Image 1 (cartoon, rainbow, N blue to C red):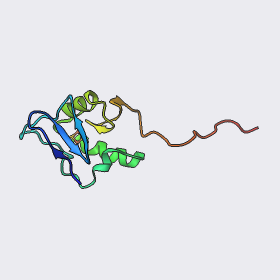
Image 2 (tube, rainbow, N blue to C red):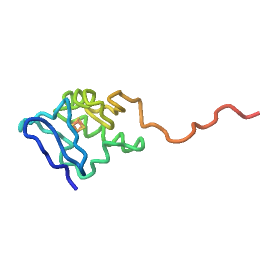
Image 3 (cartoon, helix red, strand yellow):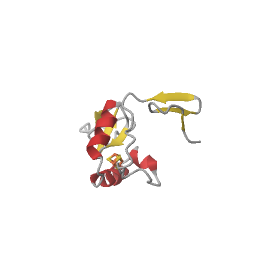
Image 4 (cartoon, protein in one colour):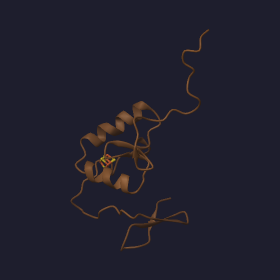
Length: 109
Ligand code: SF4
């Protein structure tokens, strides 16, 4: 199911009955070329390992709207790769977070 735009005055979308409104709407400029716009795997920009993060960053590296994208991601407190930076709640992350308990180090007796 795709999101249905419900306002022409701002970015407001209805997704499965939940309305999302961005305070920093995506610019509606036909001259902007978002390198990932038609990418067949949008999940790539929500990486779960270092390999998928590297693949997403490689696409961002050649993107002409990289600075704008990062500014939007930070303004919206977004998650995932925005402007070549991995964000969590709009904050840059050093890498993909590891799940589970960290490995024990230096506990050998
Ligand atoms: S910089 Fe933003 S718009 Fe460009 S490819 Fe990366 S995530 Fe997509």
